[in-house]
Length: 195
Ligand SMILES: Cc1cc2nc3c(=O)[nH]c(=O)nc-3n(C[C@H](O)[C@H](O)[C@H](O)COP(=O)(O)O)c2cc1C
Image (cartoon, rainbow, N blue to C red):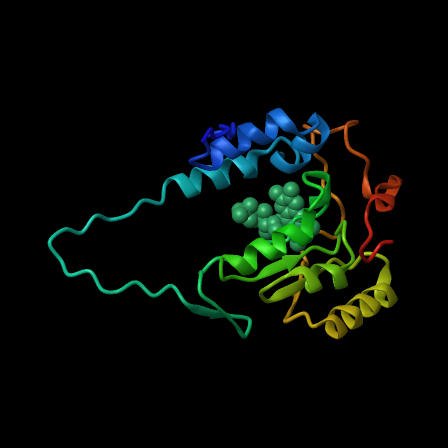
């Protein structure tokens, strides 16, 4: 029997994934995903802070059975990290938010759907196997927000996650002139709240 070898890139860490994304995505999309606000001072500082966290090795001690289960926002998860909301996910992969929500459920955790979703929130919930929360940006005024909350509630979303630190879109030096601002027609690309 002959077996066809499938060429799949070796991915062992986030940097490998980042390099794959850089090769495969249009520059505009990669910069949106990878970039940060202004000159990216805070982005660099956040990476530095994470890198300064290390494990303390402890040898010759008994190792208790590992139990990673916990409860977040009233949701029981077997893996203690949630998938944070990522707007415009469908730009990065056609499966977008539906695929990410399904993957979160398979990993035993919850998915947080961004207001700026490329799939209808009902479809994301219907395609997921685990709990899904709805992230709300106060875009489009109170009426739009109330409508979105009601839709999320009716679709079976488990919790509301309100983002309060994005009153205005920040400037991104890296992507200036390469990505459409939210008020310049980008809303046409989404099928969620703004559609
Ligand atoms: C490409 C990208 C898109 C994001 N989109 C949203 C969003 O739509 N809504 C939101 O509340 N946060 C959004 N965030 C913020 C993330 O959910 C998360 O809070 C933030 O990246 C900090 O987590 P981290 O340190 O793991 O990156 C986005 C972040 C990135 C990098």
